[in-house]
Amino acid sequence: MFWIISILLVFSTGGGILISKIDNNILIGNISEALWNVTQNQCICEMIQSNGIISTLNYFSTNQTCQLFYTNDSSILIESNVNSSLIFTNQSATFIAQNQITSTAASTTTTTTTVCSVSSQSSWSQTATTIFGSQAGTSGSSLTLLSQPIGMYYDRFNNILTVADSGNQRILRFSLDNRPSVATVIAGSNGQGCNMNQFSLPNGIGVDSFNQLYVSDYNCGQVVIFPSNSDSTTFGTLLGSVTLATLISISQSAINDNIYVASLNDNAVYKFVGGNGPAVLVAGGNGNGNALNQLSYPVGVYYDYLYTNSLYVADTSNNRIMKYPSGSTIGTYGIVVAGGNGPGSEANQLNNPRSVLVDSSGALYIADGINNRIQRWLQNATNGTTIVGGTLGTAANQLYFPETVLFDKYNNLLVSDRYNNRIQFFNLTTC
Image (cartoon, rainbow, N blue to C red):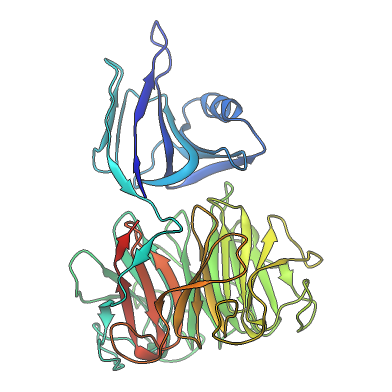
């Protein structure tokens, strides 16, 4: 659907505080602090009492969540989101999203812009464009080719994609502005191994609020951190050991980022609190099984700090997606939110799900590996819908074991098509 953004500027007399409010929109950037179970007025008070350190906030009315942002964010983006408010204060001038939004203390200003938001009616082109790698599915090691891409991270502010090129033991970064482009190696590419400048089988990747890169290495059983300016010559720093580490999710739900990593071997998900060790169990860890406090060879993990404040796990061998509340532990029982009806290709089934993503409505987007499709599972639904893929092959409407699905800043779909050695782009056609 389309949302019209309107800005309301409120002024007090005698050089008081300027407040700009945008309904149904949120700010994406570096979070200083998050608060829960507060009113919008309490959220604003926290912002004002910060003595200028905080100048912007998101407020989500559906779950009474407040997110406070640093004054000097260098890269920020506005996104539409139902039942939310974006509020500015303590600034005489605000220039955001390429000057689409402007406020001054001299006069009251109102402006509008149109934003396309994902809904239950959204649809995407059924034929993809290959934005990196071989359209024909050929693997390779040049800086225009891939070998079994797995994890991805998308930088909304710069429209840049980072990919775990697992078969080439390297992490690549490339721009989506001028496709096709030649990638840059930002970590690895020094042969197969477990030294701090090498990878054996990189799986998950993520970037924290300080632009540090995190990489989980499946074969080496470790998570390694690289600085924001890393390249193939850079030696990383060991964050911690996780046996058969798969995908990563990074939450900016508090002052310090939390790093979530799935362990295939331990049938568990671990959290590095504040980006430090030791790792803490937050899901599973009770043996391999299908009880609600167990997992079976999990691969995907996603902490949704924007909308539902919950942890989601692609419980791969149980062919289901599990959901856990914030603050979950080894003793927490999750709930099944998709699949769980045995392996298969029916609408109520999944077959080797690899990763999961959540939108503003709580709908799930699942890379359904063996079914070679991306499934959308609406909140509280008992069935999913195939939005792209569904058959195995190299054609533009086919996939071969999709690993990761992401949205770009325009809500187009990005899919790492693992055994086709390519990244596929599915254009959003209907909001």
